Length: 330
Image (cartoon, rainbow, N blue to C red; front, side, top):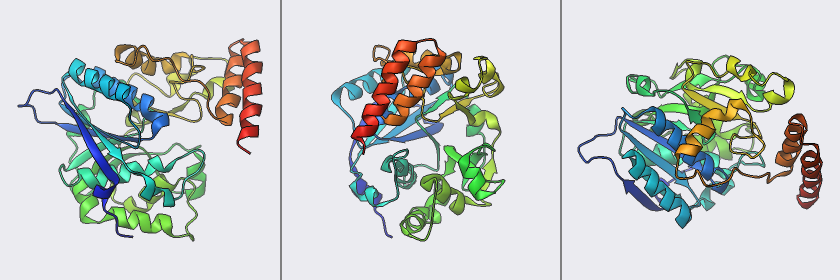
């Protein structure tokens, strides 16, 4: 498949507030649909709070943006004297690729980001919207990728993807420090789409699996502190709500909140979500309420968390919401 990333980008909105003499030392990108816009905004803010010594250019690839969001991004750029670009996508062409209830076509925006930005810059840190920063990213700027295509972190042992792959080098795609020169040189975007469009390939985690296939033996492995994988569902397994400290340590730099419950959900009221809350309160989105349940899975999880939190009436109401949403989705 031959793919032209320029056709996917309808317009670019630039919010440039960094002093003109500053050259970006780090470029960071997110790729999100409407449901993850809030998360991406707070992820961006968390990076800014903990990296005031770095000059960063932020790149947000999305197929949805409204006026209010643009105004808040403008305020964020001004607040931290930084540069933020929003790439408004026409994502119809990506909808032929595999997707599902858990992952929308937006998972492929990272490929567009790599391809498009590869024409302008040599390296890019790509992070998912559910990744929050609590430390300095300076160490990443010192990595010499050289012949490697990316610096990544292995997936956790209990990930469903690991069971399928049986590959000790299988990495999690939520944090990727990519060598864009190599991405372009090896024409990875067309190779990726060829694999995705081949009906014989059964991919459980399409975007992540494809990157693992293409990048095999071509990556540098980073320590866990750059992708500390934590699911808020852990709170349901243990009554000790301080157990998150086994996963999110003093050294952790990037926290990856995997699973149905995200730290921006109204029922994620635990100490483990504090790193999101800190950035949320410091951002132009501080007056935006935490997000309610939307899908059957979210209603079900919300009900379980509320029961754990002693909110029994709310838990019953959420369970009814789950049953109603399940009926609607049939």
